Length: 346
Ligand code: EPS
Image (cartoon, rainbow, N blue to C red; front, side, top):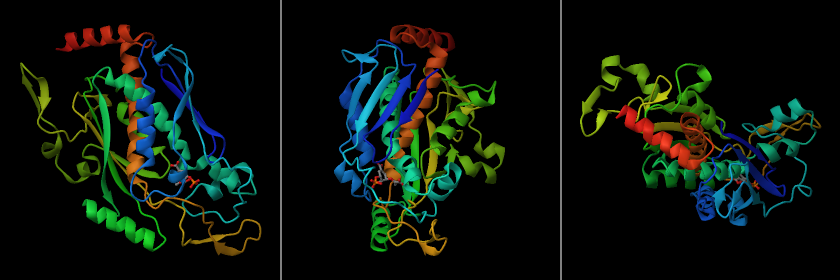
């Protein structure tokens, strides 16, 4: 089993990820991890924090001579803005953020105690972990990519840009939909035998736990609700050169909780960022008087960054499923098991 743990506050000293269960003998190119971290920082509509940070991973454990040891891999990303002890108290919780529910749950009197960990800054750790998983998947010619499908209901690149400009001008924020595609997967990752082994369920958990994600669909998703079965199920074909194949992929690469060898396709909705420069009404938690919600430095639109984070979240799940099926200790053993399996089902 591949396990991960992240730690760190948005304005604390660092963001840390630990990945346990990576096989030994995998070559790790740290520039690939840093390139993924950089991708997460980009996109039109990002805020000032991204101009301050230049996320780079330092390897603290699990890798020697650019090769995994099989022991837990620890990555540290330093925060340039580590002002946590100097930052002001936040008394007016932002609607849509974890501020109020977190404050009541943990018994704080300052929303900062919540927002420092609830911040999407933690997604830098997710991307660090995901980059390691992508390196593993690449050994098996599996790739994971993403793209923005729409922002504020607009799907042309000019339309999306205009929506973000409109949000900036109105001191507002805007969300959208991104798509993640995984290519090159074998048939047989995940399982129908138990609910927590279903690949779709595992992917959904990984995606919906990204801060701000409110919905996910796999393949045709909600579109299944308005069609006849004969119109939407992917007919099965066979040819000597291709083996089993489909001409459509409404299932999004997953049937019965198992990868079916087609591309995995999922889409998710990222809500508009909760911090508004022209804030909504809230309540001051000390005085209980009506007051405008707190205004913090933030982004206007993070849909493309959310796509990069979702790639990482998917890569983690796919790597976990791959190791579960083909072994976990040594990369060459795993490759041998993978080849044997492909030969069997050919
Ligand atoms: C983010 C870091 C944060 C925010 C944003 C994403 O930095 P700061 O709060 O210092 O500006 O820019 O976080 C949120 C949108 C949020 O809701 O917390 C990052 O590294 O991606």
